[in-house]
Image (tube, rainbow, N blue to C red; front, side, top):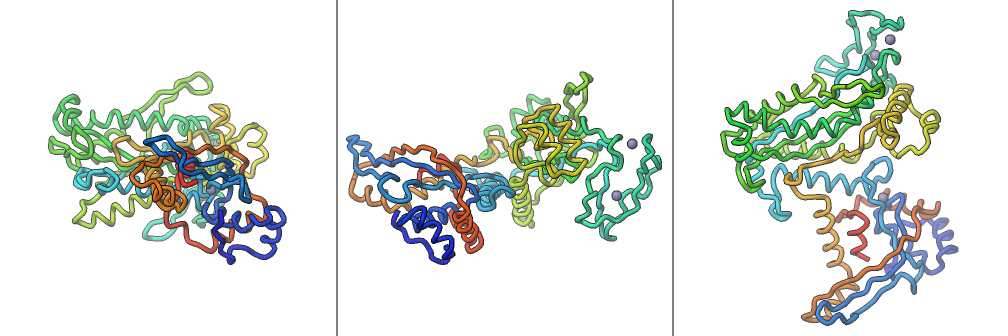
Length: 466
Ligand SMILES: [Zn+2]
Ligand SMILES: [Zn+2]
Ligand SMILES: [Zn+2]
């Protein structure tokens, strides 16, 4: 690695520290950090790439991290969460945007038929039911409304007033908190979050049934003419319950390249989604052995996404941007934590609201693995296989791009005229994270440059550029 680093990224004090540690390799370390986009927690690898002729098996060239300082390469952590690594999260957001947008408008270059743009499409928001009264902030055309001015019950059985006449400011920490924690259904709320995946699967399974009913067809006849594709994201509300925002599309029987038959329209699809949301339920076992029925909340919204020629592009851009933004969030918005809890005592020590702590305790009882997510199992963005491209496909394209831009590989290929070159990589994990001086460089990289022009992917495909 002999690429000189941009001096503006290095403060003299940081460079002095790096020079003491890495000697002549200090500028290379700065360059490696720059290439990760200023990742907050990159992974170090040691190893070698060997270029081989696919025809003869002969070794054409070899490059190793060992002979040159600093003796390792850095690979960005690839964390999706904005709270953990802003540059990696930004790359993930761009991928998520592309993935959602390709399913709305098509992308012939990535193998998604442009015909999908004319298929029936809706944008739907599914909410959780109420688990008890919480403070909230309602904003409409008249400004910020009062929180709970007209509670008929007055006080609950614990003597707590369920009225709140305040107009909460947007940063009021009481928003989302239970008015009476003793009344609030924390166990049911944690179980609801934990069951969201099952409820969603049931929703998608039952949707064709409602669509068939509205179309005057048998379910079998409908399934022979129409397929459902979707992409969805989970969003934490302030009360710690999860919302789902979804794009739902109808394709023909052979997927995105075929048009759906039987008079399928976005309006009919919207009607079927609304009927499904109102009726679908899953039954799970509660902590005390009782059966608990999991349903969507009554607040539900669905609207057709406009066709391209009719302001549809604006709709599609807005929807893709919205879903991509939520794909990089975590349970933090609902008061949860952005990393897994290994010991229950952490719940009592962590900086949490009383409401989130109570919900997390219940989630721990349900399944400790997902307590930090308040029970939710953490699939923030999911999609049907047929919806559009996959994250893996987007990463593979980037890996190819990086290989093309690699001067070492270009040289090897130029020498091996008429011969296919295969690169065999053998890299070992050699640590992760940054020293304080390296962190300062990474912070400068993040502060001085917009996110890299070519986003990066996961660890494996990013190794393709080494
Ligand atoms: Zn990162
Ligand atoms: Zn209130
Ligand atoms: Zn109460």
